[in-house]
Image (cartoon, rainbow, N blue to C red):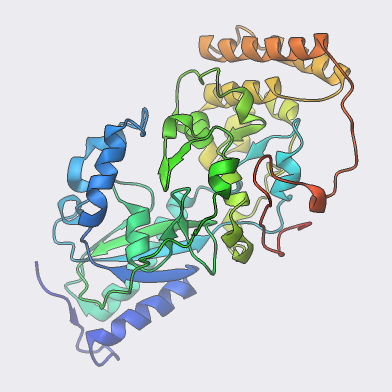
Length: 400
């Protein structure tokens, strides 16, 4: 492959100046941080394939389908000699406080990353714009942009590029920025100076994420059994949700943020400045029954441009049925919830019916042994995690 050279009319004196320019361009495009790394992922390869060997990827066949293309970037994109790794913040500080929603069982909790527009297209578009700026200054520049869209080991690459360390919950965490961000990459052939990697995990003795995980999906340091993870169960899993996990899911209908909500590093999160990631569709604080009443047409219309839409209507209803089955409320509300659930029996498919029947059974059991719950005015400051000691949100978050 042809080597990269500066164009004769470039204002840069040599390629060594290009790295800083790329970082400046990236930040002007909305990326919170940009780092450079090489393509050597040999230190991560055995760990990755051991994870696959344990079947921790569940039904995500695409995780193993491409073999070593995921761990050897040059096999995925021949000619790749370096990688530009980027991150972009997504936490909307104006959305309803996630703690208030999570602790109201009749509200639908949706992972904060999914409250705005689908990040895949936006991230790739910005990476493309960054690549075009680089191409305008160079000859021979070859690249390919990714954002959770191909067999790429995003988190190890981010760690090698200095964008954060891999936390015990397996997420990339930056000690000055937490973990509420998306990752993206440019596989390319730039001869840039690589950034120093994060070589030490910054979690220390903290076990908060492991303790708080509702389904105990974090089975070892930085090892998640996807088959137990609520994000997997509500999004990637297309079949029935195992009964053992249904009560543990609470009101989480799309993804789960518990391991991030209790992470001390997330008090340093910088909220997003991206309009596309703002929660302007009302999903940051909406009742489960309201969502249950959506028709398929409403689902498709209301979630146009949202990452949630990709799971489809039937899976959406499956998740909602489980969450409604976990509602703790007045006897009258429980009875009304049963009516709403039963009105959809036989309307969608057998999978949804199975989860409706489970939810109805749960609610009827609760009705039969009903004791009026103590209802108190809950202030955000008094909300505590289910297991861990404390929640950590940046002060900029609404009602924090």
